[in-house]
Length: 448
Image (tube, rainbow, N blue to C red):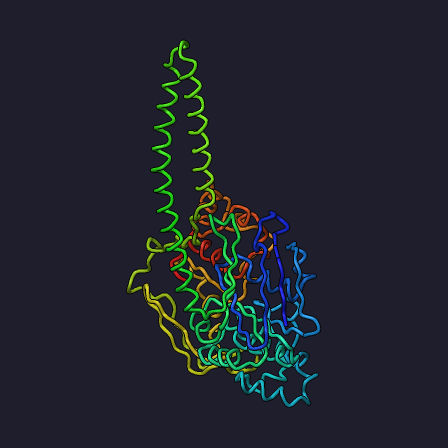
């Protein structure tokens, strides 16, 4: 139903290859999970398939993609900016007489009062936005689903609903996820996209295994290949050492042979020719032998030396009879006291006001002169000037030496030099998370 042949993808700005000579097919019943580290090209692949005109702004590719005559339903990783100011009813009113609207909404636990509300998309919680967008994709009744991180911002119940949808969906599903539980329970095929050898070489592996089976085989195959390569390298070194000893011995004999022995000189010349031929053969064997392979580097990042608030110090006190957004009451009797270096998780179902509460707390904390705050919002456009690059964003205060410190920190987070200088808007969602954590590291806040 979807066929990709010999696809090679490069970044327009720095000509870095994200995907090299990739071929795969997506057939009925397939639940193909695209996995790999952030910035490797997972979202780029989905955009090329589903939104080639938008993708061509920052990507170039060669190869063939074919899904005619089938229709693709695409769920992008982030809410498209042009939707933020639209109201929910504008997006759903054309389906008002469609019985599936209510059935799908019920399956996603999207409340009916939201379906036709005049709230803007931006005012919804992250989980409500994700559910609404997935609902709209389902209402297109596509032949193929392409989902980019479909459980982002969902509560546990929402995650379980999406998991059930992917597992039971009769249509083929191509999806990106980092959630190992979701991958284990839904994927029956894997496409692993990597950047190896310090992000200088693209590698893609297509497998008909489930996630756990694939990862076990992946680790085993790499370790086995590297063991064989190490053994062959040891054999080569021993052979080459013996070869060089013979070559040196023949060379010394040639230097010492008397001109009065032309016959002996001819024999030594022939012997040297044979020795050099052996050397070339050994090099060919080495080049044709098993090559060591690589795995992507782990991220080197720590926060152990960050400032600490004294244990008895009051950070914030919240006492709200009602937590509201507009005229909508989200929660009642919200009481919270935070002291010292406590780690507090705010949990609850989508739409209960978690992000609204955080924003209220952030507004109050920003008025404090005795605390340094770092706020990581749900939506990236609130945090970044997307036109700037990663280094300029991290070094925005102009402190001497900060650009080099920023570059070193980004390098420890597996950013290639080209990615550090690329506009933030072209980075992957995962790379934006890393960039936010890098800013947090440099800010050295008391409160997160």
